[in-house]
Image 1 (cartoon, rainbow, N blue to C red):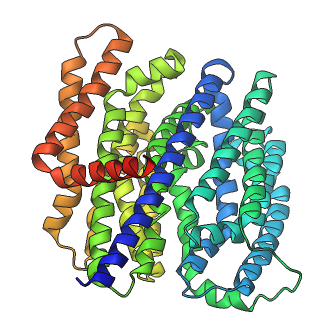
Image 2 (image 1 turned 120 degrees about the horizontal axis):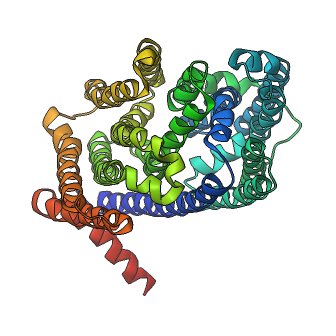
Length: 490
């Protein structure tokens, strides 16, 4: 490798590390803030039924959001050259689509309420759906920040919107607005984030409307649109599918369990997603470098995901008792299963991002759609046997789906089965041993807080020791990066 190539490699490492650092820090802070606000509200102000009510509508708002976004963000990010004309076309197209969708859903609201046999959903849905209309104003601006790797600015947007919306939700919950407070929180979040995306982006829409660039962008983004719809369905399938067959309280328990699993997943996937596509696209023509970067990101994701989510599964019962009190304890059994499946889902996310950088949005779409259909069939066919069996099967499906992605990915890059085992399943093994040993060590402790703390601490210590023995490379890279950052600060 000559000096020029070494400089490029070093520059890319710095960009990736910076993106991971800011993305990770931002997501950690967001999760902590969301955790604290959500904890207080769930413990003291709202009931499982309140969460169950709002979760019935979440899927409709998310699908509408997917239509208004239409895959334009990824379409713009993966386009080789982007001009003001492209951003302007996306802005007006997104706004037009979302306006039509809101009008349609406004009139469909009574039918949604009739389907779930809950009359209160009519007014609630009409208000909640305002959120995706407000979000349409920031699609092009968000794409601008993402394409230019403005991770810090995107982090500020998300963090600010989260703080303001959580405060609003807390105030309205305190004054007895029940599930309405959750809807208000969602609308406020979208309004604040849209405003701030506009502020940080250098793009400004003009009245010179030309939709001609949409045709070129849509060749890629149309598949992303269909995929995003299924991703939202997959992530919110329990409430949307089972809400017809189970009580609001039961849906509230499974929604709360999904929330904790999703928080753990998003802490990792959002951090990775902030950098993976822009970075891999920069080295699109150098396959060897792309493989090296991909494998490092895969190792990093596996290193963090399995210990974090397996660890949460190990302490699920104590965690729910400490955070939400015994009134939510039924959700703990769902948390255990969902977190195990969620850890494997984070790996699937890395594979899917690589496929997108290869321009294979059709493969990405069919893969996500196939997973969604299987997940739907599992829930419908197994609903009479209880929620636990359905969730176990879906978690197993997440594990098996890694091999589906592996077969696809190896068609595009040099990535063998032994590399998959080394980059992913070694961490499954090490995290599993660490968490099992910690759970065994702490199970005889009778004091709740002591048992919980011991299990968490022991899991981390055992995991680091096992990695030091069997997988020292990832630890060395993380330590070197941390040392480098500290030296620069000094």
